[in-house]
Length: 212
Image (tube, rainbow, N blue to C red):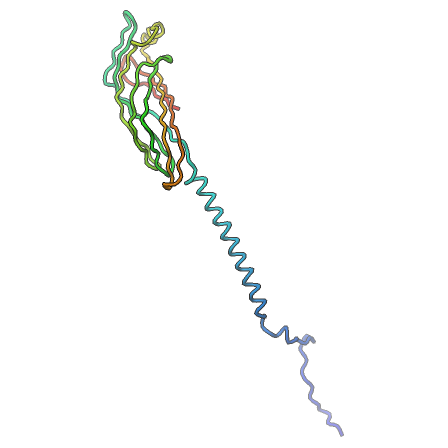
């Protein structure tokens, strides 16, 4: 007779038999494939990061801007005006010429002249010597200025202006130079200015100074 209590192997609870492939750890090919994907992701992230750094440098450090040229403080030493006879003026003052360099490299500029005009006629000049404005700094140069109305072809308008106790002059200048970045990149740049200067004749003081 057969025994009633026969032993049978236990089946999985879900009724599914796991194959040897499912039970085995990932193959070496699968691991290599995942490593290659990770490397590709890292390379892509690094490339994007480097591109961002290069773009940032191009927009800031490596971008060469034109330096700004302006008149700064102006101190009057003497001023004489005549309105009773032939209208005239004669004055001396010290002016500060400012070269503002916003670049990340030096700006070396040659000597140049600041020209002062009355109604388009040159009445005097001052020389700015050759110099260098350091990176992201302002070079300040003091110049002595002497002006008079002797070269004016007509003083008709000058008389009425002096009677109103106001004298308006213009000042123009251009400095040619070179911006140097990292001792490799060099580019020629010219700084220019056009200023309007207003003096109060009665107080013999500067009333207004506007440059562009």
